Image 1: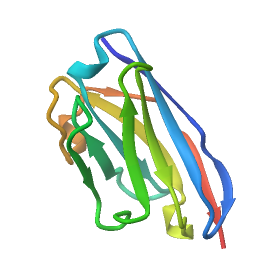
Image 2: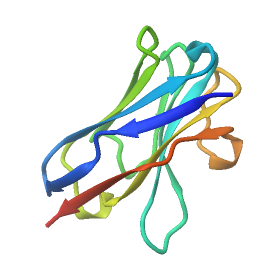
Image 3: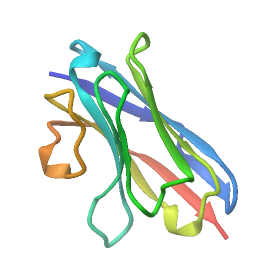
Length: 124
């Protein structure tokens, strides 16, 4: 079992930046690929970014590529999402997730553990 806790959300103006964190506990962190997803009101939860267990491979949704950076510090059992050049369309609840393999994936159905989410609101 893995427990995940997100932090770092908030209100920011368009063009601004935020860094989300996801602290993991329970098992060996490097055994898990991790991902960020988001869900806006009235929409399905969508993929944002994913990272392999050792941090060597990353994937991004086209909508955030070049603006967001996913990373992890395995010594601290923590994953991050650096979000720059934020847009109002980025407004959503952001969730971190872990899956029982070191290989990252873009489908939310393949993730086994989820955090409670953190709200990101970008004002225009």
